[in-house]
Each structure stands twice: as structure tokens, then as C-alpha cells.
Image (cartoon, rainbow, N blue to C red; front, side):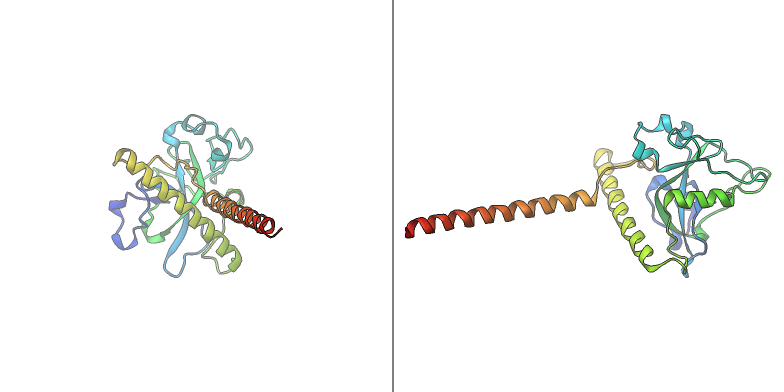
Length: 224
């Protein structure tokens, strides 16, 4: 499927994503839509037709967030390629599924991916299953998904939304205009922030204990 440019999506169903996320092919991951008509999607990127090795620095943790669609290749996933059935035409460019973050959009906002001749490109069953496993995807709109998994996935999504908001603020402060880099990673981690708070609290506690020991020593000495 295709997520069209933002101006082509009715305001009532606009997912309000960052600018660089629109006008991209997508993979629908949800088995069924939510009661509101929402589905979860992963974005597909061509890396500007450069391939992942040229588009990004050799950062293995970052690279592993992109799963190649045949004939695209991935230096860190030599045995992993998502495939379309034989009757489906390939995508216009070598592409990768970005599994860093899923997005929730109205199914009505998506358009068919149009190619001249052949069937629209849809991942084969084995490839779709492989993608779900590699991405550790949790279908929030599937009634068979456990409540515990849904809550865990929602917390992780909130964490990633915080990272994206931070990236947006820094991008705007740099140049004030222009689209964000396509799905670039910004290492702003809530866990690191929480750990810093813990370290500060422990340091304060240790200081209080030390002061109490000093005062106790002085008190005992004065009574001697």
C-alpha cells in the first residue's frame, strides 16, 4: 500500500506524522483494523536509491532496523530477504522495511501501490511471518493479542515517540525548515534519563548519611 502526500489525505483521517513519513510505500501489519478503522504500518524506504551501506554509517544496531525486500541486500542480514509472490511486480526501487517504529493510520488514508501490469506488491505469507518475527511486532488491534503484550508495546511506542519529538525539536532549532532526515536515529533514551535521576538521588542520600555520621561523631566527642 501507499501513504500519499499529506495534502491528499482528508484532515479527519490525517495521521499527523512527521513530514518525511508521507508519500511512501508501507506494509500493513495489522490482521484486522481497529473499531475506528486504524491499522498499524511499517514504512518502506529506498534509502534514496543508494542502498543501506551508502545511506548510513556502519552502525549495526541501526542497520538491523531495516529489513531488505528482494532484490535489495543487507550486509548484516545476508540470509534475510522479504519476497513478493511470483505474480507480483517488484517495487520501483530496491527497498527496505523500516522496523524501528510502527505507525497507526486509518486504512482509508492508504492507497494501492500502483505498478503497470501485474498484481500489486504484497508480501508472501512466509515473508510476512518473518517480518513479524524480526520486528517482534505486536498487533494491538487483534483481539487475540494478550493485554500484557499490548501494554508493553504501547509503552515502547511512547518511548519512541519521545525520541521522535526530541529529534523534531533539534531539527527545527538547527535550520528552522525542511523535512526531517528519513527515519534517522537520535540516541535520546528515556532509560538513560531515568538512570541519571537514580544516580543523583543516591548521591544525595550518601551525602546525608555522611553528614549525619559527622554530626554524630562531633556529638559523641563533645560528651566525652
